Length: 169
Ligand code: PNS
Image (cartoon, rainbow, N blue to C red; front, side):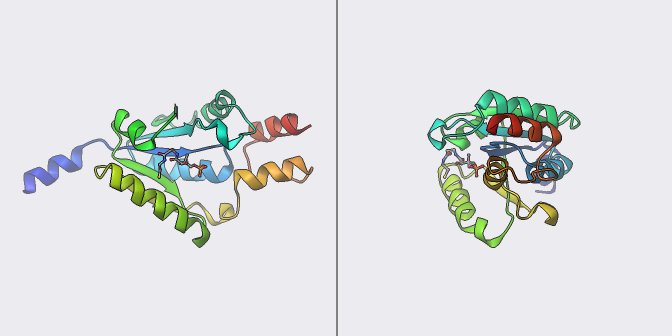
């Protein structure tokens, strides 16, 4: 038993951090940094879901994510279509990482985590809290601010700020 536990412990853990990332915010980056510290490999997975009517094309979202995650050697950026657990399995991941900002996030996250556990019991969802400075930052609100000409500095990386301004102008 002691031996089995030791070998399970030595296994490199891959975590998937899925989302729309339309676009990546400083809140996402904060969570990526925290995840990169505790998991051996972190795959940021951009969901390809045209029905959601994203502002940025998948290729643009990936490009921005790759640029802003370059400093972490154990972070990769991928894209997935279809079921998240299928992608996680294909990547050899045992963890799905999600951030919870406030209680309001919890209900939906609980449903997703339970559903994912039902369809793939081998994969655990792990929730982490972003830094409190980002507890109210969301891609949706940042896009709205940008559209209405509000200040977005500090909510998104400089590169994303530029791309957002161009996109909505
Ligand atoms: O950034 P978001 O929009 O909160 O991310 C939601 C996402 C992409 C993680 C979620 O919609 C998802 O996992 N979609 C993939 C489809 C899937 O696996 N659905 C079953 C989960 S219950």
